[in-house]
Image 1 (cartoon, rainbow, N blue to C red):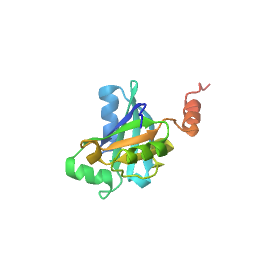
Image 2: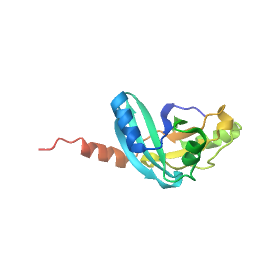
Image 3: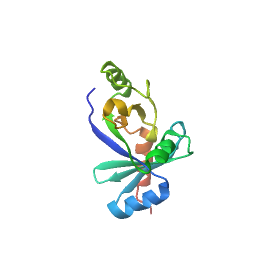
Image 4: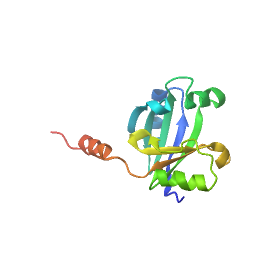
Length: 151
């Protein structure tokens, strides 16, 4: 599998609004997208920080992957996401290479992008995600609409 680069760094947080305020104040981060991702049990926000991206994850309930992570480790770095051209093909190549996959087929993540997770045991203790490279058209359309001059 050839990753195109780092798509984002995922951070587990206890209070999404407080974390958003902190990242905006300290790093000049701008909210790119915010949504509830029910199948992952989180409310998530994607922030642009210069040319990079940080994803903040607040669990919807304690008994979710991010909720259990927070209970065990507290807030902090949760995962690294690698951008790939094709998530399904990346999953197949990862499996062939012997990776322990959490997701054996793509699922929907933030922005509606296809994602899949690789168990930390396969990546020296780091939960890793592969994510499709393209931002869906509906996001481009929304961004284009929101950035139009009004008057």
